[in-house]
Image 1 (tube, rainbow, N blue to C red):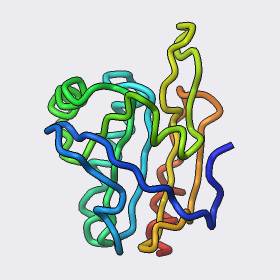
Image 2: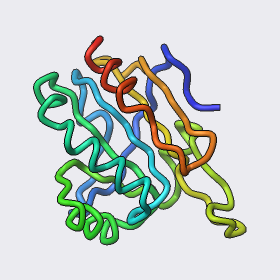
Image 3: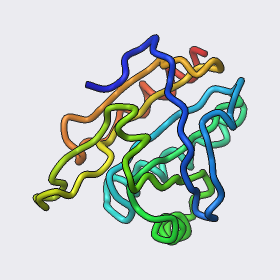
Image 4: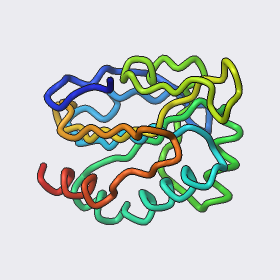
Length: 156
């Protein structure tokens, strides 16, 4: 079961596409949308990051950052961002440290025994980094309801 509304979001430190360490605490005092996705270059994941990218002007107006997290390495994520013309930070979680902290893992992805990825999940955090919206897909092929996500950000 994923983190529930009202929970303080756990901090994490992961590498971005430029191999810089990025922590949730780097965004202290700012609302954050965390989007956990299973895999770079998959159809639903690419649609999701593009949807968030297309919402950046609205999110920037609301002083809200979006962080995408998956298990892929920074080089694959960099190529994925470039292929989709995405500027938002994509963070690598190959040891699932953040995914486990948010209780959002998916075992045996695409039928591969032992292949665990981040399950598709979205958390909206207020400026104190408390969860105000939490959604986890029943399976990684289901996209989040972006209208719900944006409504929760607008309500901050």
